[in-house]
Amino acid sequence: MFYDIDEKKKYLKENLSPKRYQHSLNVAAECRKIAEKYGDDSDKAYFAGLLHDVCKELPGAEQKKLVLKSGFTVCREELETRSLWHAIAGAYFVKTFFGVEDIDIINSIRFHTVGRAGMSKIEEIVYLADLVSADRTYKEVDKMRKFVYSDLNTAMLEALRFSIKDVIKKNGMLPVCTVEGYNFYTRLVE
Image (cartoon, rainbow, N blue to C red):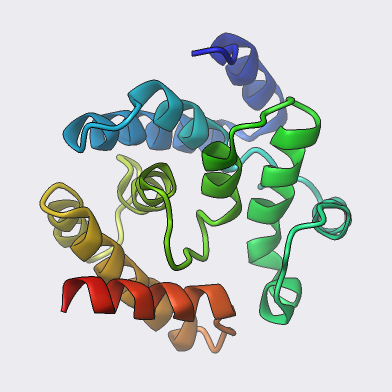
């Protein structure tokens, strides 16, 4: 791959907590496995997974500043939900500071928390790998892992259902792209 993995790992190790760094490595490894299963570019998937949380531990004010500078379309619900800022900020960060131009990598970081309709396979892989990486221990993770390694479209629908239920349970707001993603995958699967 044309991006320096060792350099990016060094950056992440210096800028993330040990737990978040390990999560990033786990997601990258899961991305590689999923990409290999579905015949996609495993190096590209690994790289995107490695960087998906690059801005996760920046202070909120810095994240929001990057979100507002990004020029990305960001809905009101995303702007009002601090836990979603790191994905938008991260996409802008890798584009601006790391020089990443690959739209699949940028979008996979941008949408790894919220999903959307019409995701590329790399975007789907990063979204799902983040949900089922080795460090995940939530109640339904084994069930979700089975979906991921059975059918990508079904896995995306189940993952979006799971995420939507979780957001509702926490009285959070659903971004428009998440609802559109749910509708998109519902049409594909059912």
